[in-house]
Amino acid sequence: MKVLVIGGGAREHALCRSLSLDPDVTSLHCAPGNAGIAEVATLHAVDPLDGAAVAALAGEVAADLVVVGPEAPLVAGVADAVRERGVAVFGPSAEAARLEGSKAFAKEVMAAAGVPTARSYVCTTPAEVDTALDAFGPPYVVKDDGLAAGKGVVVTSDLEAARAHALACDQVVIEEYLDGPEVSLFAVTDGECVVPLRPAQDFKRAHDGDEGPNTGGMGAYSPLPWADPKLADEVLATVLQPTVDEMRRRGTPFSGLLYAGLAITSRGVRVVEFNARFGDPETQVVLARLKTPLSGLLHAAATGCLAEFPPLRWSDDAAVTVVVASEGYPASPRTGDPVEGLAEVAEKDAPRAYVLHAGTRLDEEGRVVSAGGRVLSVTATGTDLAEAREHAYRAVSRLRLAGSHHRSDIAAAAAGDV
Image 1 (cartoon, rainbow, N blue to C red):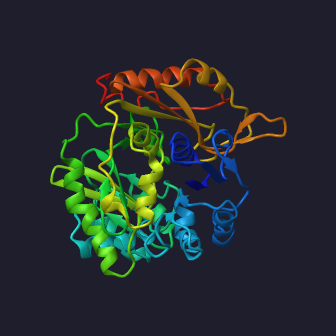
Image 2: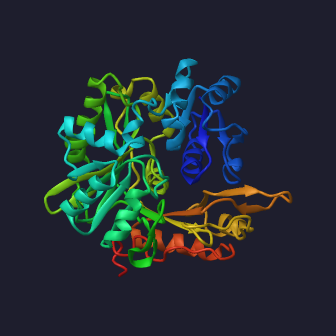
Image 3: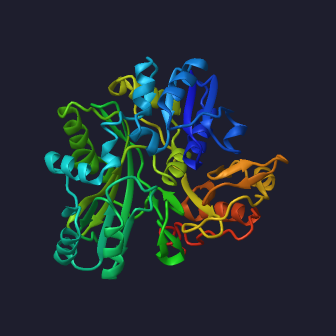
């Protein structure tokens, strides 16, 4: 199978790494990719938001499968353009990707499907904003209706901060605060059949102890030793399958990766949000544990054959990912700084730990330099979370990036290290 992956972050590096280890993949391409992905795939300088260009590239490399990684190309209809060319694509249509592209639309679908979620108001005027904030009280949960790269949500007890964020958005969803830990559960679907992957937990806040601003995610781990073993089955029955059924009933079937962000509240499981693609950094730990070859699973979803696909096989190992971010992230990340220590990690820590590139590029001298806010995802496995943490942080300690920061408490509580 010849595979083309669209995107250039750590999620796409994780996808490309798994596909590069898949014996069924004979040729692997990525557009635009990054400095790390270049080691396992052929890169192409194509704009991932340009559906016509992506479809043309799929034809050029004779791709049997196109995997669209990020949300923006999906919402822009890139998967539709590839499908129209007759190439199998893993990723929903622009219409179906509205589950992520509009939080108001997602709430509407959940209501129709009977999916448990937070009570909410959709607001477009200052008066509506004030009414909603007053109705729920602190802590306030304010979400930009559109795509915001993981940084459009404010959770605060400061009324003025909540109001300011709401008024800065064209349309905003204000909802009740959900207590309890959050869990990410991915599911692969062909629009009818739904296959859940293993749950993971990510860390949104920039600093240790869940302090600092919200980010796109500073780390993740899997499995979740504290979670109910039947969680995935419960979420499949109450959230994932009803949502996929409702999307099909509307004539906009959802095929690809449906990501449910969940809160395990005192009143049961509630959906915090849906995403229409693999989440970053949870993908890094979930794929580290998946033993089933990835290309066959994604191709079965893309071609409507998921019901015949064999049950997924998983490693008993635990996995931990630690994100190394550039100075100033998330507000104003600095870029262009050299990344050092990559060869040392490859030499001393592989295969237990490895580095996935998120925001990197090669400079004129061929050096790897930072090119984004989240620069690297250091991913490691171990027999349990404590061992996986040990491997991950040992690898992190070998990396050097001026002004960089990372959290030191990823998976610490779950591993019993706190």
